[in-house]
Length: 208
Image (cartoon, rainbow, N blue to C red):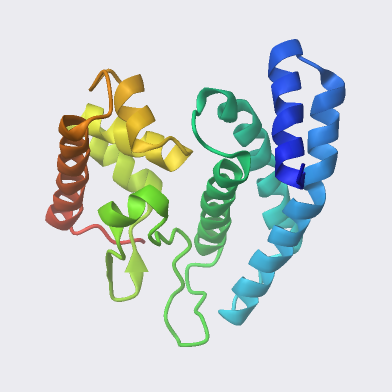
């Protein structure tokens, strides 16, 4: 049994019996992984000419890990490492964004104001988002979803669930859009993704 399989085994014990020992084991075991990711994020920032302390990434990663622990029990057909990885990705974006606010004139080594809320293509979202950008600026997650919800609440909930780690099949079924993930459901997913892409283009979103 590898490291992540053992983590998932302990998660099952935690969910089933509310076992504090299992929870302590999980939190203790993933700390080195979170620390490694935090150091990696710090180095990535430095390579862009921006100094962000390791502690800022690590503290946010701890919060994301806790969220992943709570959410994983509702996510089917996913491994915990994947779910945690997504939480850490968006947590890193939020750390960048907080420094953008503190120092609006900060610039990277190319002389371009750095964007903290970058959206790169990830897993199921890659076909929806691609690399939608203008002048090296990127769409910011919260701003987009807030406005999109006002226009299309159901589609927005679907996109939000993908970001949280749900698969397209899980999302449409849990939202009551479809009762099973068949060819018809896949077409609906495709239409929702395309609708969101059009929304982004029509609104000319850019990261501030």
